[in-house]
Amino acid sequence: METPHVPALPQELTSGKKAILGISALAASGLAVGLLVTPSAVAEGTGAAEALKQNEAAVADARAAKSAAPKSLAARSAGSTVLSGVTVNGGNSAAVGTKNTQTITVKWKLSGGSTLYGSHASLWRGTDITSGPEQFITSEQFNAGTEPCVPSGDATFDCTATYKINPRIDLKNEDAGAWKISLWAVTDATTGVDTDNARTWYLQRWSRLSNNAAPEPVAKGKTITITGKLERANWDTYKYAGYTQQIVHLQERSLTGSYATTSSHRTGTGSQAGVEKKTRTATTDRCYRYAFEGTSTTPPVNGTGDCVDVR
Image (cartoon, rainbow, N blue to C red):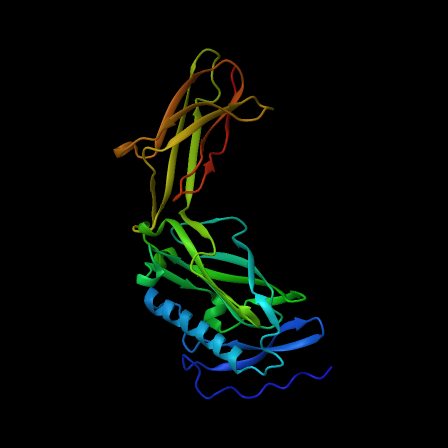
């Protein structure tokens, strides 16, 4: 089948960015040519305002490319572009520690348009994106000027974007908590997608929980002390620190059973920040651990069980 001819674009698009030709859709009748937009500057390392500005310019370029497309390619679909299946790391949260760069993956689906002129998602935090976000992070695909979406059927696309977050460069403790996804898509459908909150998700400070039951072994009737410490990443100091005044559950099981909560307590403060210590009377061989259910800023975590030999 002969590929449709696409005339040259105007010399200047809305943002002055360069546009390139590429195949972006696989229509039911065969290949359809779309126009991919390449950012003129990399958003990584710029401030939130500049990254937002570059994203908005890319949207304008995609819309201009749609307007400049031949009538045979443009406005094939009279309906709306439908956005669905937005996920972050397969759920709605991502946790980052103190040292390693974390890769965050966002996926989404588009339908309703057979030709895609551009679609990207960005991560942001703040009260109102129009008044200036506190953080605005564009994807690796956006920075490289590549399209994150691939055709997955008749007028449907599957999209995947990845984001690299370095806690020593990108984050402060205040960044933990609720974030949003800004997402746009321009297709040959009459209406595209342009939303500042395609999904709310949570960026969390990585947690860890230790516990130790002692002494081991222990004589029947003697006291067993179960000590634990709940810590989480500190993005200001790049160390782990005790998470104070948090409810942790002491859980117990037989050597072959399942863990069940036997009591709940709050972690310590001051010099005992994040520490929990409880005692039990040794009666039979038993395993102990602490469990933390998590908060909006910190993921849940279970300690590694410690089994005590009672003699």
